[in-house]
Length: 171
Image (cartoon, rainbow, N blue to C red; front, top):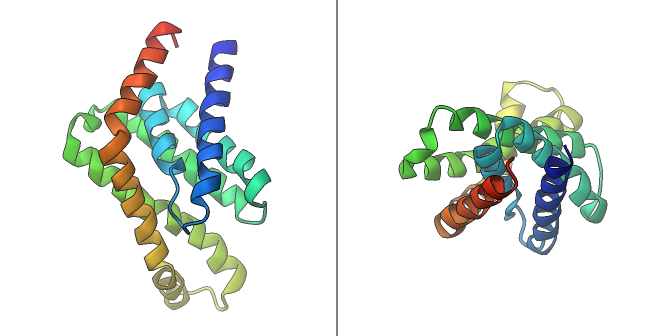
Protein backbone atom coordinates (compact mmCIF):
# COMPACT_ATOMS: atom_id res chain seq x y z
CA UNK A 1 0.00 0.00 0.00
CA UNK A 2 0.97 3.65 -0.16
CA UNK A 3 2.24 3.70 3.44
CA UNK A 4 4.69 0.88 2.69
CA UNK A 5 5.87 2.59 -0.49
CA UNK A 6 6.48 5.81 1.46
CA UNK A 7 8.33 3.86 4.16
CA UNK A 8 10.54 2.08 1.62
CA UNK A 9 11.26 5.37 -0.13
CA UNK A 10 12.24 7.00 3.17
CA UNK A 11 14.52 4.13 4.24
CA UNK A 12 16.15 3.86 0.81
CA UNK A 13 16.71 7.62 0.76
CA UNK A 14 18.29 7.66 4.22
CA UNK A 15 20.53 4.66 3.48
CA UNK A 16 21.55 6.04 0.06
CA UNK A 17 22.28 9.54 1.34
CA UNK A 18 24.33 8.18 4.24
CA UNK A 19 26.34 5.98 1.89
CA UNK A 20 27.65 8.97 -0.07
CA UNK A 21 29.76 10.73 2.61
CA UNK A 22 31.01 7.40 3.94
CA UNK A 23 32.30 6.47 0.47
CA UNK A 24 35.44 8.47 1.31
CA UNK A 25 36.42 5.65 3.68
CA UNK A 26 36.54 2.38 1.69
CA UNK A 27 34.07 -0.25 2.94
CA UNK A 28 32.78 1.83 5.85
CA UNK A 29 29.09 2.30 5.17
CA UNK A 30 25.90 2.32 7.22
CA UNK A 31 23.79 0.68 4.51
CA UNK A 32 24.18 -2.89 5.78
CA UNK A 33 23.28 -1.71 9.28
CA UNK A 34 20.12 0.12 8.11
CA UNK A 35 18.99 -2.75 5.87
CA UNK A 36 19.39 -5.32 8.63
CA UNK A 37 17.35 -3.21 11.03
CA UNK A 38 14.68 -2.73 8.37
CA UNK A 39 14.41 -6.50 8.04
CA UNK A 40 14.25 -6.92 11.82
CA UNK A 41 11.51 -4.33 12.35
CA UNK A 42 9.43 -4.59 9.16
CA UNK A 43 10.07 -8.13 8.00
CA UNK A 44 11.84 -9.97 5.25
CA UNK A 45 9.99 -8.47 2.27
CA UNK A 46 10.56 -4.82 3.17
CA UNK A 47 14.08 -5.69 4.25
CA UNK A 48 14.86 -7.22 0.86
CA UNK A 49 13.31 -4.38 -1.13
CA UNK A 50 15.06 -1.73 0.95
CA UNK A 51 18.44 -3.42 0.50
CA UNK A 52 18.08 -3.98 -3.23
CA UNK A 53 16.68 -0.52 -3.92
CA UNK A 54 19.38 1.18 -1.83
CA UNK A 55 22.11 -0.34 -3.98
CA UNK A 56 20.33 0.73 -7.15
CA UNK A 57 19.59 4.30 -6.00
CA UNK A 58 22.91 5.03 -4.30
CA UNK A 59 24.85 3.80 -7.32
CA UNK A 60 23.29 6.58 -9.39
CA UNK A 61 25.58 8.83 -7.35
CA UNK A 62 28.52 6.46 -6.80
CA UNK A 63 28.57 4.66 -10.13
CA UNK A 64 26.81 1.67 -11.63
CA UNK A 65 28.69 -1.31 -12.96
CA UNK A 66 28.66 -5.09 -13.01
CA UNK A 67 28.78 -5.00 -9.19
CA UNK A 68 25.35 -3.33 -8.87
CA UNK A 69 23.22 -6.51 -9.18
CA UNK A 70 25.54 -8.24 -6.73
CA UNK A 71 25.16 -5.37 -4.26
CA UNK A 72 21.39 -5.53 -4.72
CA UNK A 73 21.46 -9.26 -4.01
CA UNK A 74 23.79 -8.94 -1.00
CA UNK A 75 21.95 -6.08 0.70
CA UNK A 76 18.58 -7.55 -0.21
CA UNK A 77 19.73 -10.85 1.28
CA UNK A 78 20.82 -9.10 4.48
CA UNK A 79 17.36 -7.59 4.88
CA UNK A 80 15.57 -10.80 3.96
CA UNK A 81 17.56 -13.05 6.29
CA UNK A 82 17.21 -10.55 9.13
CA UNK A 83 13.44 -10.59 8.73
CA UNK A 84 13.43 -14.39 8.76
CA UNK A 85 15.61 -14.59 11.87
CA UNK A 86 13.52 -12.00 13.71
CA UNK A 87 10.61 -14.45 13.64
CA UNK A 88 12.81 -16.77 15.72
CA UNK A 89 13.37 -13.99 18.30
CA UNK A 90 17.14 -14.28 17.97
CA UNK A 91 17.70 -10.54 18.12
CA UNK A 92 16.59 -10.38 21.75
CA UNK A 93 20.10 -11.52 22.62
CA UNK A 94 22.50 -8.57 22.47
CA UNK A 95 25.45 -10.90 21.87
CA UNK A 96 23.73 -12.54 18.89
CA UNK A 97 22.74 -9.15 17.49
CA UNK A 98 26.27 -7.74 17.65
CA UNK A 99 27.83 -10.89 16.20
CA UNK A 100 25.22 -10.89 13.42
CA UNK A 101 26.05 -7.31 12.41
CA UNK A 102 29.77 -8.08 12.48
CA UNK A 103 29.42 -11.27 10.41
CA UNK A 104 27.28 -9.53 7.78
CA UNK A 105 30.19 -7.19 7.09
CA UNK A 106 32.12 -10.21 5.87
CA UNK A 107 29.15 -11.94 4.20
CA UNK A 108 28.31 -8.86 2.16
CA UNK A 109 31.91 -8.50 1.06
CA UNK A 110 32.27 -12.17 0.16
CA UNK A 111 29.13 -12.03 -1.98
CA UNK A 112 30.55 -9.00 -3.79
CA UNK A 113 33.88 -10.79 -4.21
CA UNK A 114 32.16 -13.57 -6.15
CA UNK A 115 31.43 -11.31 -9.12
CA UNK A 116 35.01 -10.01 -9.06
CA UNK A 117 36.32 -13.58 -8.91
CA UNK A 118 34.23 -14.64 -11.91
CA UNK A 119 34.98 -11.50 -13.91
CA UNK A 120 38.68 -10.97 -13.28
CA UNK A 121 40.38 -14.21 -12.25
CA UNK A 122 41.48 -17.11 -14.36
CA UNK A 123 41.12 -19.91 -13.73
CA UNK A 124 38.16 -19.61 -11.35
CA UNK A 125 39.17 -22.29 -8.87
CA UNK A 126 39.39 -22.63 -5.10
CA UNK A 127 42.91 -21.19 -4.97
CA UNK A 128 41.96 -18.04 -6.89
CA UNK A 129 38.80 -17.68 -4.78
CA UNK A 130 40.81 -17.80 -1.56
CA UNK A 131 43.32 -15.31 -2.96
CA UNK A 132 40.53 -12.96 -4.06
CA UNK A 133 39.03 -12.99 -0.58
CA UNK A 134 42.39 -12.63 1.13
CA UNK A 135 43.20 -9.49 -0.87
CA UNK A 136 40.00 -7.86 0.35
CA UNK A 137 40.34 -8.95 3.98
CA UNK A 138 41.28 -5.49 5.28
CA UNK A 139 38.29 -3.88 3.55
CA UNK A 140 35.98 -6.68 4.69
CA UNK A 141 37.16 -6.14 8.26
CA UNK A 142 36.51 -2.40 8.00
CA UNK A 143 32.94 -3.17 6.89
CA UNK A 144 32.43 -5.71 9.70
CA UNK A 145 33.84 -3.43 12.41
CA UNK A 146 31.83 -0.50 11.03
CA UNK A 147 28.62 -2.55 11.29
CA UNK A 148 29.54 -3.47 14.85
CA UNK A 149 30.22 0.15 15.83
CA UNK A 150 26.97 1.35 14.21
CA UNK A 151 25.09 -1.40 16.07
CA UNK A 152 26.71 -0.53 19.41
CA UNK A 153 25.90 3.16 19.07
CA UNK A 154 22.63 3.35 17.13
CA UNK A 155 20.89 -0.06 17.19
CA UNK A 156 18.39 0.39 20.01
CA UNK A 157 17.50 3.98 19.12
CA UNK A 158 16.85 3.18 15.46
CA UNK A 159 14.83 0.07 16.31
CA UNK A 160 12.71 2.11 18.75
CA UNK A 161 12.11 4.87 16.19
CA UNK A 162 11.10 2.42 13.46
CA UNK A 163 8.85 0.43 15.82
CA UNK A 164 7.04 3.66 16.79
CA UNK A 165 6.67 4.47 13.11
CA UNK A 166 5.35 0.96 12.48
CA UNK A 167 2.78 1.30 15.27
CA UNK A 168 1.71 4.83 14.38
CA UNK A 169 1.05 4.02 10.73
CA UNK A 170 -0.21 0.48 11.34
CA UNK A 171 2.35 -1.19 9.09
